[in-house]
Image (cartoon, rainbow, N blue to C red; front, side, top):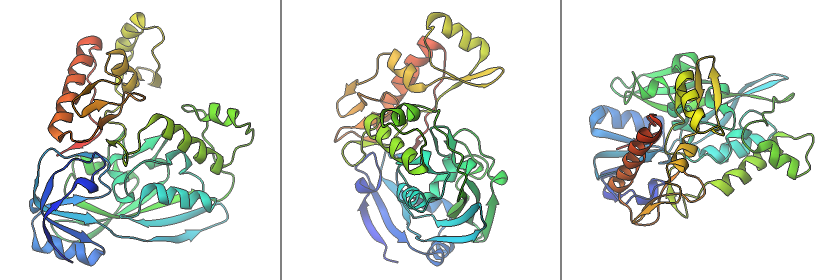
Length: 337
């Protein structure tokens, strides 16, 4: 391992924020990670995956460790399913494409989500009616303090909406080193009703879609709605979609009869944060190089030289206005450092 001092992180976070790490090192094996954890306390290390769900607001005084473990291995299979262990440093979208090309079903709705495999359980990533918890069986971890390996089952991860045990009680205590998925080999359970997937399939004249068709549809939709981080700095969806009570939802619906929603249960409704932001007048708004994307209000962007602080201030302004207009608190999905 080579430790690089005063290393720029601009190319290592999808917002393209120009901050520096006091020291930077790439961990390419479990042995590398164990050595780094033995030599440092948890508060002396800053672990970096694909840099896709984070907003950096200042230089990092700790040693930044890029998790770069690679490998995809089929560990078990039967007539109907395959179990695949994927190392944390693998690119998420590339793994999804690999699974689709091999006709393994379950991940197709999660195509084109930025980031690496190792961070997906932390956030319980999700899109178009599918969440990571639907396909993950377990994840391998390394406890930073003891350097002991531990496997967390799906249930032990305590997944919620963009939540897991790694964001709460075990925050900053474990490094996810690999994730195991259970995917279908036949009789794939296709999910086409969420978002514009069915509409896209209809436009293509596809009546009996395959997982390949769904993946292509999702990629096309996302490319239409979401900016490419390589072209405009962003982290995808910046805010979580808020869940409100039935009473609160009905109050809003009185003023906005066409409000889109998803009924979570008898007493709770999920409202699209992007719709709230657009109704508040922020879609396409720009303050210097920090802005709200013109096609998708849920995405905050860096048009070039915005600082992390400037994007945080924009986010706070949006949150304040949403609360004043709807009495709804919208939370950041992105981790802010």
